[in-house]
Length: 304
Figure 1 (cartoon, rainbow, N blue to C red):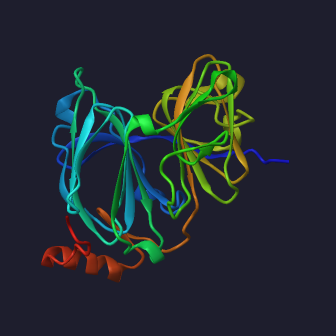
Figure 2: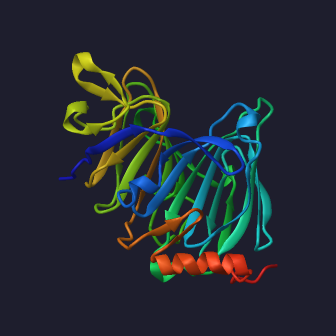
Figure 3: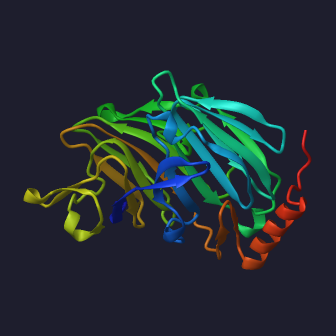
């Protein structure tokens, strides 16, 4: 019998400033290592005022990680030291594997209404792949399948598999799954996730129950929305839901629909040495990376 995963903790993403003055909300980051292993950080950069994001993320290095950017509205211009240039817009994904080292910039631009909505996820690489050749994947919205499930549930599959349909991003060492799920009011969504894999959900619209028992008092819940009169916990916009182990997740939308990102991956279980945009396994590797960056020997790949 499958074991449905229980919530370990729920909390709200927190406002912060990154890049050249970009105002965003951080769902998790440095303080949560290693509980989200292999994931390091999730930033929610949904904003409607160009002043909050216009500065963008000018040229900066990465090593030892993958950055995954998913855009819901607006666009992000990208350029990197491999010679790649491009724009991702509504519904697109940029999956960049920094590997041995890459220098890039990401410059957001709002849509006609001034909206710049999206998310960036960081995933670590194991020691065996820290210094792999960098690569860049520009995945257009038309390449991302959306499946319709029972009760009107829909899931966009960036990476992973739902109901026999595979997402376009494959051959990732941490075996991740990245879904954008919409559950109508009154409907339930269940999804198998491999036992032992880290799993979490991030709510981006509406509200829902993310635990089969729907009992806020059996878990550690921080900053969520409560219905105290019936002891039930409803997780709303910008709630991060961290799951314990099991075989599947169950999400129920009560009086309104709910939309969320569902992400899982295989833990690396290695030491993490992290400073700014570089994540290695040891402090010595970290020092070497910054020394090489200062000396101009950081880039190991051949440009175009």
